[in-house]
Amino acid sequence: MGFKKILIANRGEIAVRVIKACQEMGINTVAVYSEIDRTGLHVQMADEAVCIGPPPAGESYLHMDHIIQAAHDTGSEAVHPGYGFLAENSEFDRRCEEENLVFIGPNSRSLNLVGDKIRSRKSVEQAGLPIIPGMKGSHKDVAKYEEEAQRIGYPVMIKATAGGGGKGMRIVYEEKDLKASLEAGMREARSAFGDESVYLEKYIEEPRHVEIQVLADNYGNVVHLFERECSIQRRHQKIVEETPSPVMDEKLRNEMGETAKKIIQITGYNNAGTVEFLVDKNKNFYFLEVNARLQVEHPVTELTTGVDLVHQQIKVASGEKLSLSQEKLEQRGHAIECRIYAEDPLKNFLPSSGKVLFLKEPRGPGVRHDCGIYGGCEVPIFYDPILAKLIVWAEDRNLACQRMINALEDYVILGVKTPIDFLKDVISHSKFKKGKTTTDFLKRHFENWEEKKKTEDKQKLAALACAFDSSLRAPVRTGGASYQKEIYSPWKSLGKWRLGEK
Ligand code: MV4
Image (tube, rainbow, N blue to C red; front, side, top):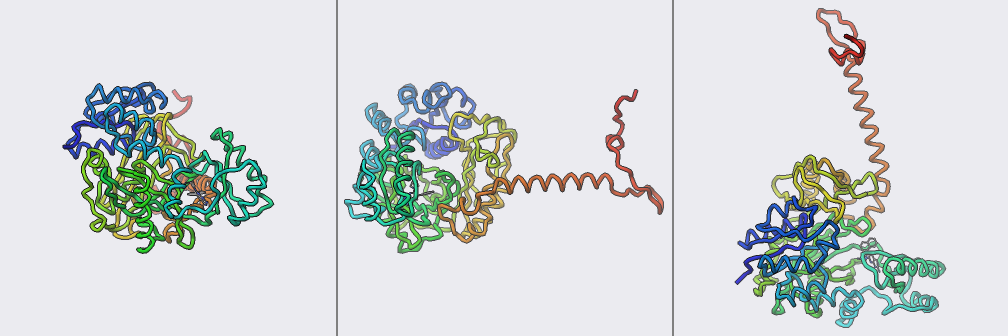
């Protein structure tokens, strides 16, 4: 028997997405909100809503006691964490288990394991599965690093042991640069993570970030739902994702899919998860980490497989056996997602907040818009700035690119800044259209996009002003064959308004 009531411990577009899945399954929903989110779309859509605190996330969406209390007060049987906030917090997972609430995600033990990047790398390596060649731990002595670097072979990548998301990463191409880079990496690791230890890996050149979606039930059944290409990233923040990956072939897809399933099995993982890999230019792949949550980019997998991943999460969490079999799963067509953030691409993607004055949502065949805002709502500055995701599906990649460009052109958000224009240029870029999407794509092709755009905008304004001006100066026929040239005067063009006249 499934759940009767689920509390969604999140906000914005993912909370709306999960509420919709619950509504389709006949499950009542409880939204939680901070005081500033009182009028949020997710609050309006849920059957019930509970205020869990003031705007700061630490006092609301990250406040475990308030969320658990809200679940008890409303008689919720399960909690869906979405992504971000407490979605990968094994302490919260454990607290839910203790409070007899079903955490819609992995069990706390496996969440703990996959959350420890070093431990999970060791487990994967012991299973004989491909990890990035590198060191097993860190050292104090620089000379040791020099030996390790010789063993690994240059170029090497310096990574912070306590790091993640690319922070503190440094590439070293030659031994003469190693010492200085190590000292800089240790300083950055100490200030960013309070732990200066770093380790070396072989630098994977021109890498692609390719991840495999997996689903595992509580009885050891696991399926993978193919790959997602996530290489278009800005400061390690994914902004465009797609499936199938332009580099994938059947052999590589099966190998990566089977490897991902093995990793899920050895870590005792259950529910939806994503196994991240790096793929090098020779199509070798290396395990990076497991993401123990429903990912932002899950819709591209849903559109090409026809599987609703949130439905599956809820069914598995309620104790159902997986209804999907690997043999029956297949991909059809091509899907691309663009993330719509409240950020100003002309101000180095500075977060933008304020009231959404106007929203025109893209629509049409094969266009999906997972949206957490509405015309007139407020976009607060307190949280991750993701507003929505625009996803398209089409029969092949070229059509999907064209559909995305058209959808982005139809899309209007006024009141807060967004990178809609920037995304249109990314998808329209010849290298993107050719599928040449390695992780340095933006660095290579969009380094000075801001300046170019600002110049373009000035030129357009100048052209507009001239066009407007010349339209006023245009020769006007005043009857008969002859006509006199209208001499431009603002007072004439203003009509009856005159300064200083009675
Ligand atoms: C790497 C790598 C190349 N070689 N490790 C980025 C953050 C985390 N997910 C691991 N990441 C990488 N690790 C080795 N040995 C390339 C990435 C990487 C990346 C690096 C720089 C800029 C953007 C990137 C996007 C995805 C992965």
